[in-house]
Length: 151
Image (cartoon, rainbow, N blue to C red):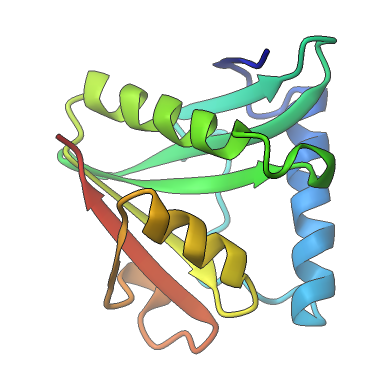
């Protein structure tokens, strides 16, 4: 059983999950300079969700950054290695999509990277289609962008 709830960007569990993601990405890319554009923050991420297992342990997260009145970007989508393959990522993604619909957002965009093939497969499987790199990701050779119009 997984619960997914709103969480403050700067809560201890939210910060721990984002740091774990950063460490993993630094190792994959061989450096800590793999995010084009402005890093997300409490001021720019309007929704941040944390998934917890039945023991209350934080095992995943994801957020939404508004881009314009009709679109938002998925940021800091992450699931701990021990919880991967259990449906947690899908649950977080669906919860983010629900939050977006509730806010009147009709299009979700996201960026992942060339060293994250499992993320690319995940988003494609979940109905996201590859698009040209947008915004700060234009011209970024390690970036791969996706979008989905919400029903």
